[in-house]
Amino acid sequence: MTGSQAQTVTESLGDRAVRRHREFQGKIQTALKCPVSSYTDFADWYTPGVAAACREIVADPQQVDQLTNRGNTVAIVSDGTRVLGLGNIGPAAGLPVMEGKALLFKYLGGVDAVPLCLQPRSDDELIAVVRSLEPTFGGINLEDISQPRCFRILDSLREQMQIPVWHDDQQGTATVVLAGLKNALVVVGKSLGHVRIAMIGMGAANVATYRLLTTAGVEPTDIIACDSQGTLHRGRSDVEARQSEFVDKWRVCCETNPDHVTGGIAEALRGADVCIAFSQPGPEIIQPEWIRAMAADAIVFACANPVSEILPEQALEAGARIVATGRSDFPNQVNNSLVFPGLFRGALDVRARTITNGMALAAAEELARQASRHGLSDTYIVPRMDEWEMFADVAAATAEQAVAEGVARSMRTRDEERIVARSKIEQSRQVNECLWREGLLR
Image (cartoon, rainbow, N blue to C red):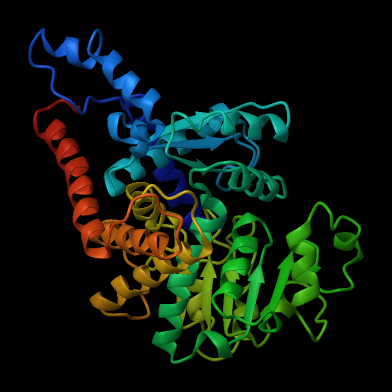
C-alpha cells in the first residue's frame, strides 16, 4: 500500500464513521442497573427509601462504593488540546473520541465511564475541577491534553487525590508498548537489556514510555531520542533553557545518548535494534532508507495516528523484521485500548488509591503473557481487542499488584478478581447483545 492509498483508505473509513456517528447520534447512553417492575420500586430507589442509603454513607463514608455506582464509574477528562493526530481541536470536537473511550471502557472492561470535555481558563482550574469530582467518581482517566502541561496536571492530581488518576496517552500507551516490545524481542531472539532503542518524538506517549522502559530495566545509555528539532543530548541548549517547563525532556537529554549523536531521525535510527515512534502522522516521516540502516531483525513501532510515520509494507520491504502501528487495520496494533479497560477494572475492584508503576508493569507482563499463550510471530506480538477474555486477566494482574503494594482498600486474590472481572465484562457484552437482538439498537 502506498502513502496515497493509505490516505484513501483512511478517508473512506472516515466517511463511514461519520455516517454511523450521525445515525446513532453518539455511542453511549445511560442504562439502569436495577429492576423497576412496579410502582413500589420507586420507594426503594428514590424517596423515601433512598434517605436510608444516604444516612449509611453519612455514618460511614466508605459505604459510598457499596451503595452507589461510584466504585464502577470513571471520568474521562479532556480539554481537547491534543486529540489523536488532529492537535488542538477543542473540547467539543474531542467529544467523539471521549465517547469512543467510554464505549471501550464499558464493552471491554465493564466500567461505566462519563466523558467530561472541559474548557478551563488555566491548568490550575482544570486541576481544581478534576479534584472536585472525587465524591462522584472512582477513578479519573485524563485524555488528549497537550504536553508539557499533561505531565504537571497528572502529577498534581495523583498527589492530591485518593482515587486512581491515569493519563492514558502517557501510561496506557507506555504499558502496551512495553508488552509488545518484550514479545517482539522474544520473536527476534534479543533481550530488553541488550538492544539499542531509538525513540522518535518526545511527546506524552514517548516520555511515559521512556519512564516505564527505564523502570523495567532498560539502561538510559542504550537509548537515543529525537524530537522535531533533532536528537536529544546535553548540548540541546533550547531544551536546557526551558528545563523547568520540559523537565522530562531535559532529563532524557542528560541521561541518554552517551556518544552525543547529533542530527535527526536518520542518525537516531542508524544501527538501532528498535524504533519506537510517536511523532506526527505520516506516511513519510520515517524514510525506508533509514530503516535499512538499522540493525538486523529490526523492530519498528510506528504509532502515529491516523497514519503511521512509515507504512508497515514500506518498513518491511526496507528490512524491518517486525512492524507495529496504532491502527486496527494492520497487524500488531500497539494501542492503549488493550490496557485501560482491564487495568481500571482491577484497580476499581480492589478500590486502589492510585495506579503505580508496578501495577502498569504487571499489566504489561500479563498482556505479553496472553499473546504468548496464543503463539508469537512476526505479525502477532500483542493480543487483539476482540480477544475479550484477556481483559479480565489484566484486571486480575493489576488488582493483585495493587494489593501487594498496599494501595488497595479491598483485599482480593488474583483468582478471585479474575472471576469477578470476567463476570462484569460478560454482563456488559450481554447487555449490548440483548439490545441488538431485541432491535433496540437500530
